[in-house]
Length: 251
Image (cartoon, rainbow, N blue to C red; front, side, top):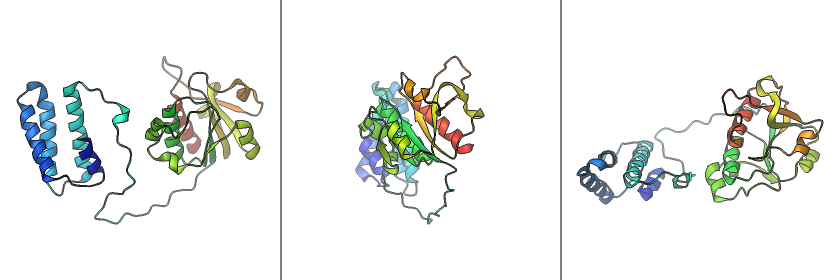
């Protein structure tokens, strides 16, 4: 089924034998009450594959649902490493795609990650950095490897869209002396009250310990916080990065 899903992502139609196999599997699983959901999903996928005009994205959705039903039937829990990596091949289209000019970034933001230990968080944040148009992504020497498989999967291709540098914050500030350093940490000015600069460095800290106290102690570092309104006072660092970048872009 995963091979079928990979082929559909590349807009490749499966062989006739695959469709017949799906129909046969649907008939077999229909005999078991517990397998009715999987049977229905397999039949829907097989029927859609027989229609030559069914859009590839629709087929991929049906395939994904069939896989989920089979996993549930077998007692297999879904996991993030089951996700397929993105493909660089563009799906063919009957209509020529129009090129839409993107607006110029409102601010030049360098995103600095200080001692993040999770490869997943590195990848997730790089995806947000690429989406919000950060000019540069910098990692402290103590950060996890951005080439780790979990980082690559979470990034969904974003790592290749960014200028990534492994550098100390001290050296980065020497390179960008006019950039305002904004530290995202608890106990600071609420995001909605902070006036973001046009050129700045956004610092995100370690998942457990936060930003280094020596960084926060610098007199010219601005500490800002995301207000919390529920019982939980902290957020995942990747989620926090997306919120902060969204506020910065909107300011």
